[in-house]
Image 1 (tube, rainbow, N blue to C red):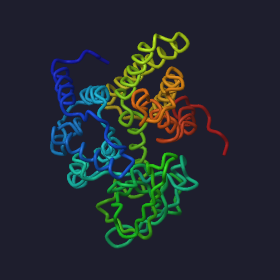
Image 2: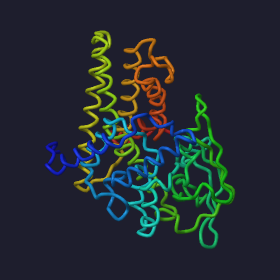
Image 3: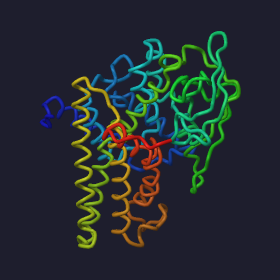
Image 4: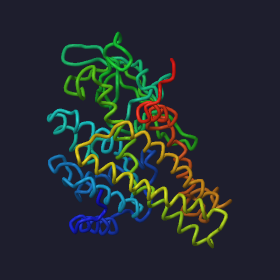
Length: 386
């Protein structure tokens, strides 16, 4: 692993830094978990796309710049350092797209990827189901064969972005008689199709960050099956590997947060009671950065992201909580001020970030499940008796 950047990579970094300085919104956009905020973030995606910065690592023909993964990491570091808006299209760009590059047909790539890059299509995840949250193989929603395609029926829940998104991707049981991890197929479908009902789920703050999706005999043509019929588990694990191992939570997010934490600690007189925790958070962010560069090096050498992605997911999700808890303890009572209070530190960003961090050990597969994966598939420990 070589952490010495080339002149071309540094020039790219400087280009991104300059563009973000001139174009990133000065005031935060409305929450992307609201209809108005969702629209504003979609427009930001279009602005990024017009500058050739929405999907820098994708091939040019799909809206990217053909940049290396190293340049993508540099872009992410600059993006978060600039405090640029959250990526409303992250489910498609960071999760579905890598899966489509690996398993999609050329026709699917030509048809769907450019619209994803431009923000024209925003994608929702349709994974979890009632009674089958982290047990993805326990899903019950079914798909039956019909001429020219499939009919999907069932219920998905906790679908991120689904309240305002355009399309969704997810697993359905296409062979009810097959074993748990077989007979599953990966489908793509529009959320405004006949038979689809989207019911938003409000968080404690009332914002619909998630939704339930009900499917009643929804037709999906064969061209919207991703990968082989019956091989959906393998395709889904490709998505999960990207989600846990590389693309969903880039180091730039934690580097920027750790930098803000150090600045807050310094500006408040260097409180010795939280000093070691501040240093630990900064070290954790740097360690995550180095681990990600190691992963990128392996991928560039032809390796795929395997079960070790679960180690990555447990690390960043727990780092996020520790970092924000340290910030709240440092801020004291001020941390509880609402975002619209003039006295709220950083505009209430630390409190909002803390509440979001608590979801980290749950989404992308609960950390309890990830520890089972680590034990069995990374460490080779015996499975629990079932």
